[in-house]
Image (cartoon, rainbow, N blue to C red; front, side, top):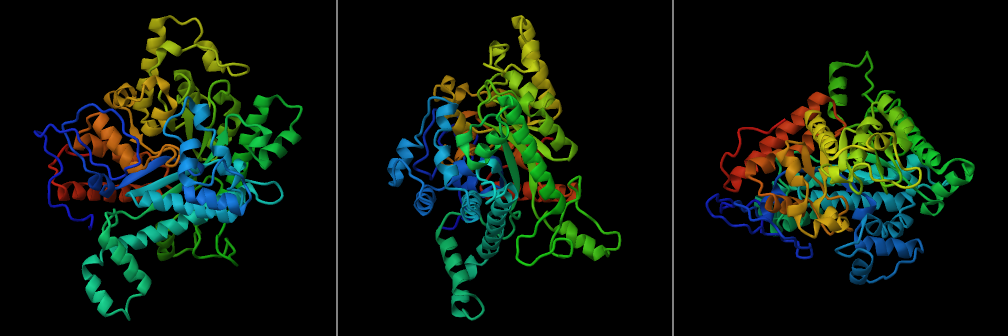
Length: 543
């Protein structure tokens, strides 16, 4: 069945139904609050989406993990896909630490260019196949690098090649989707079309899919993650790093590793790299390389046509931001201040995992110490009751010390001020519902207890993301299904939230080009709404 067949309206405000059709039968169910709107998965698939928070390693395909483990002699608890999924990647976990346990198996098979390129390609295609149009894939290069064999720069380039291949393939599927109605004619005149193209079009004609010739093109960015905490056994790179810094305080070592990562990324951004053989970046007319502040290099002698060609070209290596991930409690943001100051001075965007497993102070520190423009998770934003609780050895940051001895009223005011600041600055909250249900026992498996509802009510810039599609058994259609039903999202509110993902992205385009792209996104979104029988809900998207 072609997904473009949308004869029946999917929304009726008077219907009072709360059912959301979801084609992914293995995705876990969640209790929901009744909603007055009904969104079918085919609609949620068709609308253009941005996934700003998705981890490379946590989104690997199970068959790929097993194949790579055999190729690189990495032992797994099981080679049976279902058994591996049940034992290492179960539906629920006891804590964030338990949730992260399976990642060691994955990173161990991702220490070659071929493996990283393959997995980056597959993760991107899995996202594009459910209607994601813009993807920011994040990973920790230091978990994959091998000193003397596989550098941080080579890690990033391998991921970039996989993402670039997926982008062009997905754009080609958009083009071919427009040929579905001409399939019989194409088969008759197969001299003009390759058998491969005809096979792809036949496949599109039989499946529900998001591809459309007038949909926004696919784009991506790369986010590199530093680690709040690491041990020598995490990777060969970290083992070597510890050996060099044996006399240093551990928290200083964590910070120095982050500085090393930002330095490597800045070097890569400055010189650029071509990913095809025999290219010299300074002479290659196909490449757009970056100068010291991350802007496109422009030659004063270039013609207008050449400048326009550069304007229309993606950055050759769209490393768009830095992040820190890993255990929060005991490993404060202040350990990484030097690295994030360096990133800030280099015009590298910043997003920070904060408030996922610790209180509001973690979010405050992400903003004040690390210049965060977006917050990953932020689930404990409103937990004034845990302010000032200890973080363990060496983990009490400056901001945490200042919160000691506060009265309950002062704590509430602190959270109110922090929330107001986040809203005013449009600091985007990257909310990952399925992941939070797995790692936050206090939610009791019920999204009615999730703070995303209050974030939306407070007017914060919220976008929903997948986090880890394998580990959390999810995709973007499922995340929007959960959100729409649990929080009773009207079509206008849903549209605004989805659009937040594009507006708050770190897309590697000049500002005017990004605005032009985003206008195309909202135009296409409204077109899909009309095709599915939605009326005019809300005059326009919010800022």
